[in-house]
Image 1 (cartoon, rainbow, N blue to C red):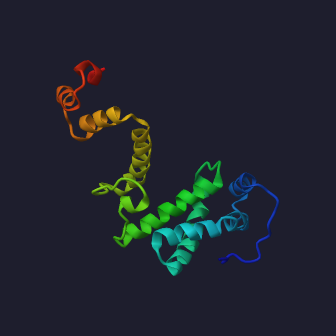
Image 2: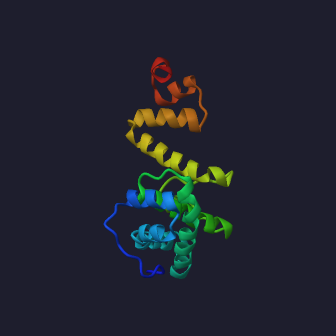
Image 3: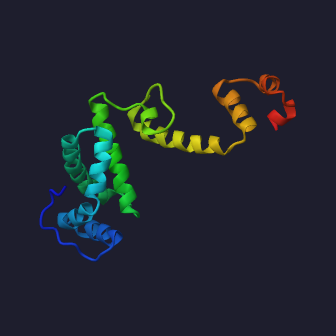
Length: 171
């Protein structure tokens, strides 16, 4: 997968290329940097879009989107940043076509709705972090958190359901 032709590979690091691009806005510098990760981004796009041709178009669209974005953002780790830009680009494409996959298909808890697109990606990250936190709790702690925050039970109700002293629930 290479739509960027005749790009020289320099020994410069990603960070050096990012800084050089920010300094002079040279598209060839950005193209060299982008070409390093095109195969990864193509795989990401195929994963979300489920269509190799649409994924190729997305990879080109992502490059075009990077031209102004990289100038605006302070990017320290280009690979991770461009991965997230690509993922968000694909999700926006699916959203525009009303084909946004369910959250459960992406490997975490399912949302019943995405209330506002600007917060959708933040909410996705928060759910991922919440799941990690919940997984680290003991069974009793997990049950208490679910009863209090998700089922809106009072401390007294939780103490009754879990056969736990009220002070243990409240404390």
